[in-house]
Structures are given as structure tokens and as C-alpha cells.
Image (tube, rainbow, N blue to C red; front, side, top):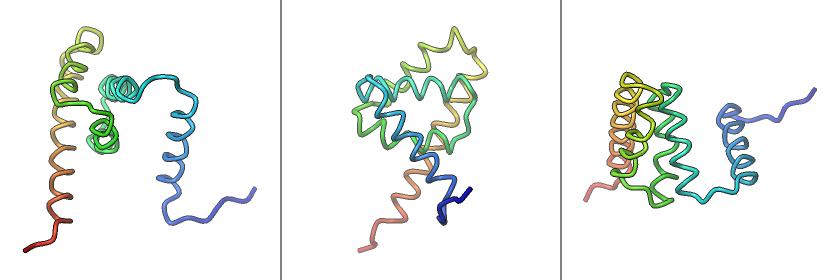
Length: 108
């Protein structure tokens, strides 16, 4: 079996899986992102997983209030500990995104 050569094979695979999922899913972009955020919270995903979804969620028009609504909606199902962990991971992901954005901005 031959594999394609790449500097980022794991990221490339994740990107391909995401594209395939999007092509097969009939949900609108915002509903899709709400579903993915809920799934991340349910499985106690790390901040980096939320970071990968923040840009697409914002591109889909999701607001911070809607992110909170997703956590409120899943709280009775996944429990307090997972919701609090998710909130912390989302906050950490947003902090990372802001730091990266600030680092990329040219200084006057």
C-alpha cells in the first residue's frame, strides 16, 4: 500500500474527513456547527478541537450566545462536569485564536 507524502498527514486526513462529512450532510452550516460543538462537549474534547471549529462556527454566523445555548441544551444530557469543561476549553480556544490573530497583525 502506498501513502501520499505530506508534511501534515494527520491534519490532511482530518480535513478530508471533514470535507467528506460536509458533502454528505444535509444540515445548514449553523446547525452543523451547533451539532459538532455539542458532540465535542459530550466527549470532553480538548481546547484544540474547539479551536478547529471556532472559525467555521463564526463563518456560519454563530454567536457567543448561541455557543452558550448549545451548552445549556446539552447540559441535562452530558452533565455539569462536561459542560463546565467545555466552557473552559472554548474559552481557552478563543484565547489561543486571539493570541494567534494578534501575533499575525503587523505592527505600525
